[in-house]
Figure 1 (cartoon, rainbow, N blue to C red):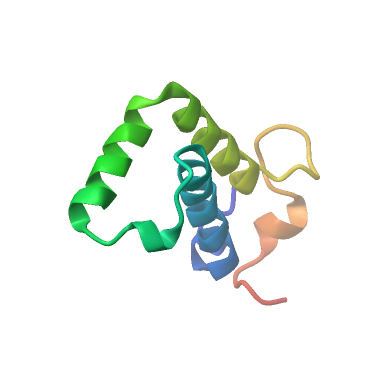
Figure 2 (figure 1 turned 120 degrees about the vertical axis):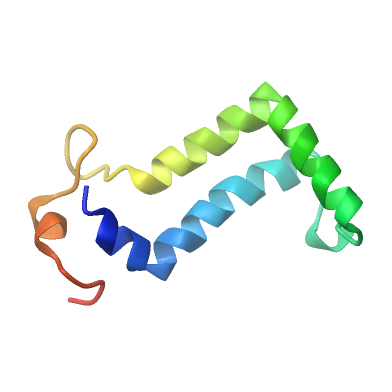
Length: 88
């Protein structure tokens, strides 16, 4: 895996953030406007971590963001491995 390229790519980070936040918001039927206090934020995080379904949903979303489905196994394509910057 060419982690250096992935870590430099803002689209990768957006995908990871969405893979974490979206299942939590959907499962608990919340929107961003519901988080008006830090107590609510931490209580939601604690509830999400304690819920196996939410944890599995987050792991699945993160896996889909990390894994390159165009190649077999858990690796990057040869083109991605050879890149040294995010742009072409």
